[in-house]
Structure formats: C-alpha cells, structure tokens
Image (cartoon, rainbow, N blue to C red; front, side, top):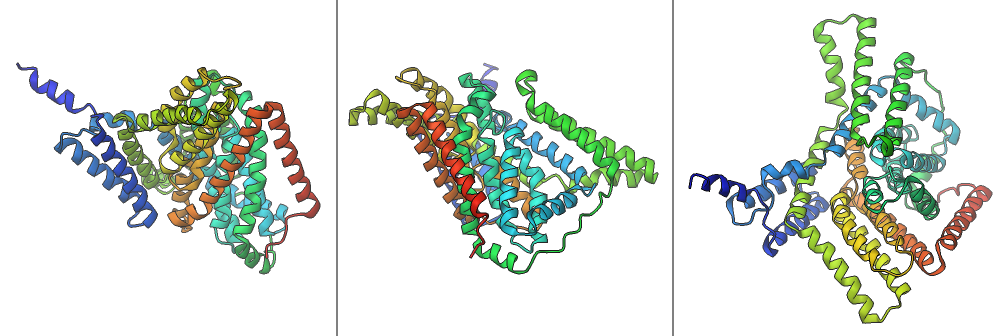
Length: 500
C-alpha cells in the first residue's frame, strides 16, 4: 500500500495520448502561432505563457500533456548549446574588428552597389551553410549583414532576409548543413556525397530564383540606397591582430569538428563548446598580459561577452518552444499527423487508380508539401523524427527508386521553414540577433517575404521530384544544372539589373 503514492506520481509523469490531449496541444500550437503573427506580445512572453498553460493543464486536469520531468527529453540541448557556444565565439571575434574589416572588403568588391552586395551575401551564406550548419552560419553572418546594410544606408531586412533564406537553402545541400538532414541521413543510410550529388542541382536553381526575387521585392530600398551614391570605402585595420589569428585557428578547429561528425559522432554542440572555451581563455590571457587588470576588471571582461553577445532571450525562446512541441510528440499529436499522411497517400493512390510510378511521385509530392507546411508552423526536428519511420515504411512498399521519398522529406522540411520566423532555428537566431542590434524584423514582415520564398522553392522541388520519378535521376539533375547554367550565363551577360 505504501507504493500507491509513488505509483500515482509516476503515472502523473506520463503524457496522456487521447484525442482531447492532442487537441489541447494543437490548440496551444495554433494559439502560439496566432499570437506571434499578431505580435500581441514579445515572442518570449508568448511561448512562456503557452508553457505555463500547458503545465496548468498537466497538473490540474486529467489530461497530462507534458510533465516537468519530461521536459529534459523535449529540450534539444544540441541546438541550445551549439547556439550559446557559437554566440560566444562570435562575441570574442567581434572584439578583433574582423567584421568591420570584412564588411569593408565586401563593399569594395561590390563597388558599393547594394544590389551586388545582396547577391554576394546570399551566395556566400548559402555556400557556407553547406559546410557549417546553417545556425552557425547566421550567427557569423548576421553582424556582417547588418554592418553592410548600415554602411549602404539600406534597410537591414533587405540584406538579412535573403541571407537567412539562403542559409536554409544552402544547408539543405549537405548532410551536415541542416539538423533534419543529419537525422534523415542516419535513418536512411545516406552519406554526405549522396546529399551533395542529389540535392545540389535543384538548390542551385532555387538560389538564382531567390536572388532575383529578393532584388524585385526590395527594389525600392535598393534603388534608394544606390541613388545615394557609393560610400567612400576605407578598409579599417584589425583592432587586435594577435587575437584575430588565434580566433582563425580556433574557428578552423571548430569547422574540422563539424566536418568530421561522421568519424567522431560528436554532436555539433561539442566542438562549439570547445571553441567557445578556447576563445574565452585566449582572450582572457591576452587581456591579462597587456592590461594587467584588477580582479574586478578581469571578471568584467569575461562577463561582457557572456552577457552582451549570448542571446539569452533567443535561447529561452527556443527552450520553451521545444517544450511545447515536445508535448505534441509525447501526446501522440505529431505521430497522429504522420499516420494521417501515410493513410492519405494510400487512399489517394487507390482512389485515382495511380500506376506504381505515379504513386511514387504522389507520395513524394505529399511528403514534400506536408513537411513544408509543418516546418513553417513548428520546428522541423521533431516532425522529421516522427516522419522518418513513416517514410521508411512507405519506401519499403514502393516500386521504383524510392530514395526520392527521402529527398522529398529533406526538401520539404528544410525549405518550408523559410515561411515563418519560427520555422527554422536559423530564422529564430537571425531575428533575435537583429533585434538586439536595433534591426527588428516583425513576424508579418518575415512571413510576407519568407512565405513566397518557401512556396517558390517547394514548387521548384516538386518539378525536380517529377523529373526524378518519371525521367530518372540523371535527367532531373542535368535539367536542373542546365537551368542553373542558363541563369548564371544570363546574370553574367546582363549583370545585376539595376532596381527600378
């Protein structure tokens, strides 16, 4: 009898999976999305309030959505620690003056022309995101993009929005570029080269389209900045060359840690944390040797980075958002949606009497678009975790090259997140860092631009998937590469068209 209370307590820590519990979590997710869209309160207050309601329901009603004890499993510590570590590295790097130096060099290469700057930033971000993860890339790129925009007297959003879209597009190209790809690669047995060979061709087309659309969308801002005349470009000297050299070595070590994930199996947070520790230690030692500060001054020097440059509100927002989505996983809501996807594909194929090849394309199309929509509304990581066994089961029963289903999942999950500021970790990070720098991007402003980008890239993905299924992988890839080559030749022949 004395075991009754502990057993009841243990039962209270288990989420209920009935339809009412799932509906309550769905209501919370919709409520969070609506409040963020309306900007009724700061995004941190919105998710904090949602978690408070979630726990009130859990502990004071029969519906146990997610207990406090379960939050440890819901929190993605890899993402949180990775972000904190890279923010600390960037914070130390900023003290060397390297961002001001890089901004001036990039401005010089662009001839001070805003439209060229936009394209250079987008392409550089996409390329970097393919080899670093996209979150790390935007942590480095956001300060540079804001600096470029201010030098050109350009609205920061005109550089930041194409930049963050490019980070998600470029990150889709490789196994390590976006967290969902790491999960998909592990679940499907796909290698780094598999991702590069299959996804690079359509993503090149998407990048050309993104730059073109960005130039049209921000044409008035670009024209106004360009009309002001090219700014006088003076490349400043580094304020701390010795620390900058140390940071280059530390950054190279962190990059090696990211690139050797398949050998070491280290989560990305591990090299980021090691890099942050090394950066803070080196900065502290150099500071002590040069200034010989008092104990209080020395403490202040370290705290300046951790307090000023680590985006604690952004990390807290991520944490509370993970808790809400974790409730969706634990109550079975996300599993229910994934099962409905599987049933819908089977029913659709039967209803239309589709051939095996057409059924494969139908399945790929549904997976791509459902993943895209879901990634726009919630973080794509938990959805992909649930979708992987569903896709594996579908792939086992399909005729033809069922590997296309994995590419559909990757494209949908990674690109759909461009639609909203909460759809991808890179989006949340960019918006948070920009806000701290006084360059606020509202939910609606992000969604107006990002929604079109997400839709356009998913349409391009659908066309590539159709070619992959009906004409074969080689035809799909060569067609995409051909279109990309034509677009590149057009840009080279006519140059970046002056916005009007």
